[in-house]
Image (tube, rainbow, N blue to C red):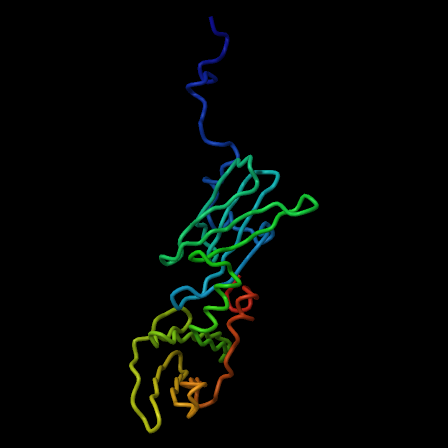
Length: 221
């Protein structure tokens, strides 16, 4: 004979962890104070901010991409290990390793390459400009292999026009006239030179390698 209330029988108990956050809206689950590691990386012409939440007491591990939850694990008794996810068909892995002093080391891999190695390669494959005009920030990325041009992660469809000495690509956004000039440097080692103008004023090129080490500098947080 059982003295348990019918509502307390094993078959009636919920199988969901009581600490699950499913009932909390995503925008409220995201808390910058819980982030223990973050990286910034351009993938297919778009810039992504990747953040990790690692709860050593709760056993919760969450991965956010541009503020959106892409992976969540609750009640993890093993605090080290790796999790994989995809960003625009690129396979990403975040690995948690133990470090001296009861601490942890967090490593990001993109398509099998460490974040540092990936950063070096992207520095050779892209050109980046960052500027703010009339209170609006613009991030312009040029993919050198395809010559695809992205402005704030949007692929631009304008085509280049031939001019004396090279090509010009004209783009009009929010009363701003962007001109991407492609010219020969006249030096075989230097190759093609790319210059970006905004309202006829040249914008200095940003260093992708430096920008990627400062995730919050070009992506809203």
